[in-house]
Image (cartoon, rainbow, N blue to C red; front, side, top):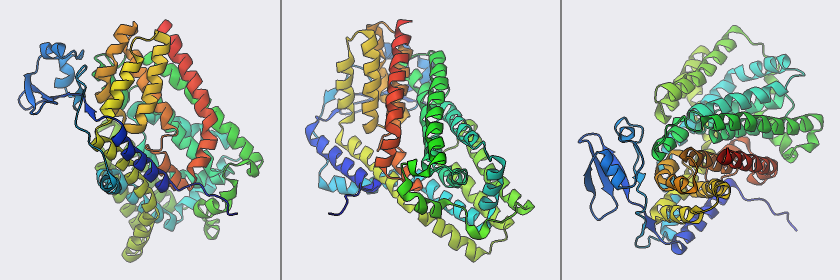
Length: 498
């Protein structure tokens, strides 16, 4: 009998999309009214009735709508997206997503995710150009020699730096760029590709889970909850430090086992395939790190430095990031004296290598599109808030965290979840006798926890780059998720009783 093979990432996402389409027939459609600030005429616009209603942009209007958010948060641009208005949920006509909608969802998702898809394709082209120059191989050989006997430093450094990016400016989608670069380095250190994947992806997850000053999660959520974003920051810093230590120890323990005995690798059966795809080219093994190759590596590194600075300080997003990598690849081509025809051919082939990843991102976005078109997201939020209302505060805060974990499957966007849910969930803290910052922390921890395994998030796209199956990732990460769940529940419980 032929051995059953675990389905591909694309197949998993299509199954999930089909289940979500079925849910739109079973779960009642519903909507919260929403409020948007219009800067042009200094008014609020309320959506939810048959026609939008214009309201004066005053604190009194917000108080009347039971929205405990200072007016200046709207006026200074802290809250730009429509926010949910508490106590306005109502069922609407069902909007079931049938076969046609299901078939259209991947296409709609690809269109909506075009920005990140183009970033992925351009990065694929850049990596191909870098491989052509031989700079990677020379640089990896040099680094492997320098780290000999101290390879664990690589795990600590990568996980720490990416976690710092996650906690400060929400480094998530951008990590897609790091996999093709760092995997060969980890392989040269005698680790497997799972260690590289874990250091990057887990670093991003723990960083965004314990966001300290991340504007895309903690700041926008705090604003929507009507509190200062510094409220509760002490608890988040402690969670970040302890959580990061737990994750690094977990990764290093696995990495050392694999280094000592490669057969202990969860992906040992793919060892030859992955080393062929990402390992150093034997024909370039003796390449010296010449001045030209050093300059190429400097330009390549500068692309990431510029990207991180732009995103964190200049309000850049995907268009600007993609432009940086495109310009960087052209500069590298000029330095390496690659002929135009060869440059274009190599770049296009490199982009094609990541086309499968691009489709995964689009299909995952298509699941969210089905959810939005079926209008069941608000219904799930309404019932979730009803279930947690009136609980004892220790049970309440942990239930809120688990609710956010579940909701993040349907609404993986941290900023989207914040503006939709915070005006509805944060008032529950008042009745439970705890600070609203605890709801913000529960939102962060809940979404961050599920991000480790969320198939509608970035994990399937990341796995596709590393050529690792979702089942193998689950086998690797489940113990860590269990440990972090207990750790976060203890943190939240202690916090509400202090």
